[in-house]
Image 1 (cartoon, one colour):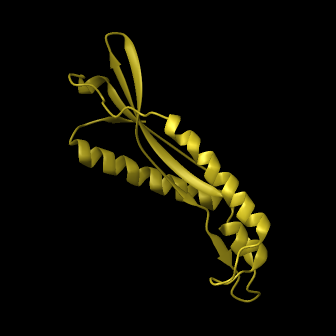
Image 2 (spheres, one colour):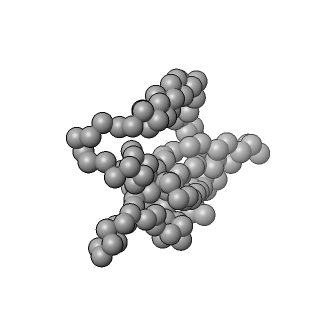
Length: 136
């Protein structure tokens, strides 16, 4: 969508060019592989909280920014890592008010946006679990 808006200057009601339609169809077909991904959500019943830590990772590129929160559980000399929550966004484009041209935001700014959503994810997880975690 961003490519269509940026490259072709399309309005909302215009038809997409065939190459964009084809690219979208290929992307849609690739989503079939998502059915193969399994993410367990059980974190363990009797885990000692002193052995549980939350870890947040965030990153950005010119096209998107994202963050995720993992739970690291140490129990009986074993370590388990569980994905708790993740969030991503398409990188916004900024429009120059004078020239009306659309440009990408800088990577450092997108990295900061990723850190913001990561911090919010950590707060959300802490609030929903009603537990004390060590944070990294």
